[in-house]
Image (cartoon, rainbow, N blue to C red; front, side):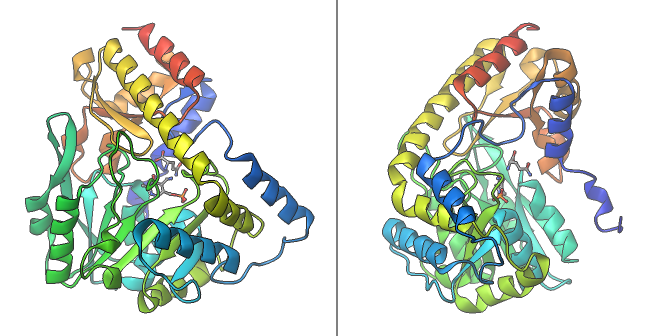
Amino acid sequence: TVARLRPFGSTIFAEMTELAVRHDAVNLGQGFPDTDGPAGMLEVARAAIADGLNQYPPGRGMPVLRQAIADDRARRFGTAYDPATEILVTVGATEAISAAVLGLVEPDQEVVLIEPYYDSYAAAIALAGARRRTARLVPDGDRFVLDLDSLRAALTSKTRMLMINSPHNPTGAVLDRADLTAIAELAVEHDLLVLADEVYEHLVYDGTEHISISTLPGMRERTVVVSSAAKTFNVTGWKIGWACAPAPLLDGVLAAKQFLTFVGGGPFQPAVAYAINEESDWVLAQRAGLADKRTRLSRALRDTGFTVSASDGGYFVCADIRALGADDGLAFCRELPARLGVAAVPVSVFADRPADWKHLVRFTFSKRDETIDEGIRRLRADT
Ligand code: PMP
Ligand code: GLN
């Protein structure tokens, strides 16, 4: 393995899911659902395979999917993206993120991340030979909020891109209009690109609003919006993601993407297009169901002794293990599958200053109620 990838080892998801499988543990670690998405969508995928849609799709993605993505963003945010030049279908959001960095950031430039950050961001920056700096979220009551001063401090004359993720993995924080406005003002002032990872855009709870930073003044022209079908339609294995950006930026993303995978997911593309166009009621029901699961898991973890922070969106809650007499989340998660038959993910692996996050463990509530309840039953066996 080359030096620039060596620090990353294997992903925490691979490690914890491997432990979960080995110990037959309830997997509340890796964020994926254990139920299928809308039946009509699955049928479209089956039909696409039966109808022979099994060869390379177009380089930018099937027109039907690009049109569906454009229509959806126009409907929800009032923003117009030209499906011919401003939307690119990728192999999951993961590829869109890597291609955006590889295609838009020079090796001597810097990318600013906000800790804790999704693990692939740092690896993508390393692949591109670029450098990262980090700002951070900080606790505020029982939520995590952006520390704007840390963001200002992370910006230098070499900063090219800022990556944000809202709703947030792992904290469940959702950036509000004030924070997004402040970020947008900094981006304009420093002439930065912003990569907005919106993979959990539909999963916001209790009336929380998802605002796309691309809709704020001066931002459409400098934002690459990244999203994915994975979490919206319960198809994490299909790896259908996308990027939306003005044509000159999207050309950079495509320049890299074409040599990473060229194309991907042919028969799944019309199925995701169908789901975006026709299954908005399913998505609303899914959101309501996930809000209930968030409450179910949070309450049960609190009753078990953890201190649990509020989660306003996404798939995850963060639990403080200190009240249980533990303080090292990584060690805690490494032994949990064997000890109690439950898997979770330590938050410290998402940070450059792991000490700040050492006491936090991430649990996902993207599972059937029975799965959540069985996980809790096992955790209680010990506490
Ligand atoms: N960004 C975040 C914040 C995520 O949690 C994930 C994992 N779903 C991804 C990107 C990757 O998405 P995909 O599975 O579509 O590649
Ligand atoms: N996004 C999911 C998570 O954070 C899983 C991603 C993965 O397994 N690479 O758990």
